[in-house]
Length: 137
Image (cartoon, rainbow, N blue to C red; front, side, top):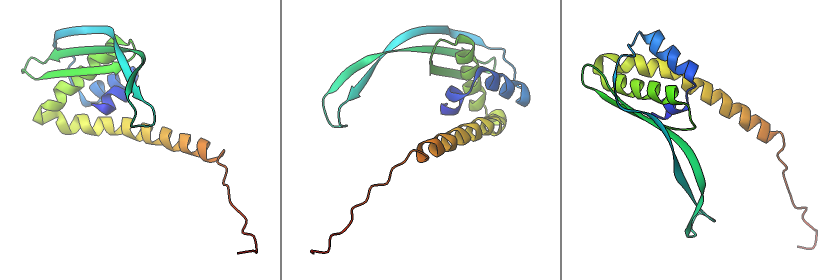
């Protein structure tokens, strides 16, 4: 689900088309957008506080074979939420699980490359501090 949530709309469409999965499903909960309260803590051990609101889109679908898929993601992209729910439902089917996982591996690879690029950008600005030892010790 994390990979489906991180995938772009084009990637989700590519997964469904590449694996040959149908997008035919009943909408149990049509994609809808709402707000959730993001909470935070100062220092990791302080009291929780309301950081602010975030836009979230959710969807729920049922395949003709009975599997139910759910998806939540940050943002307002309703088609993306529905396709992610479809992938969740198809993943629950034993006959299509391996194909969905293999197709989502491309999304995992893209995320890995992006994380490595971000790490390289951060490493380029890294400053190493050191202390010179005085001879009095």
